[in-house]
Amino acid sequence: MTRATGTFTGDMVLPDGKVVAPTGKVFDVEFGQTVKWDGNLLVEISAFWDAALQARLIGLGKIVRSIGWLDSQATASNYVEQL
Image 1 (spheres, rainbow, N blue to C red):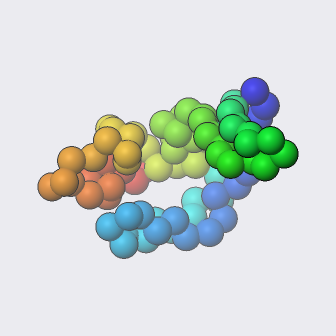
Image 2: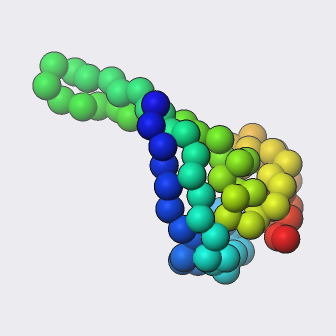
């Protein structure tokens, strides 16, 4: 575990093509990852962090569902409420 920090300074393009303008707000969240090796070759990296907290910190409001759990009739912009 470590920390991931940054500032929301560039456009964020959602999977449905909607563009969220940068807010200029900073984030500081715990970040972790696991890795899979095949001998000396790194073959997989899985990263994880609290994406809902990161969204709140950068001023995006509430994420009702993780984008990875959306049903086929939904779009990411349905679940992001801009403050």
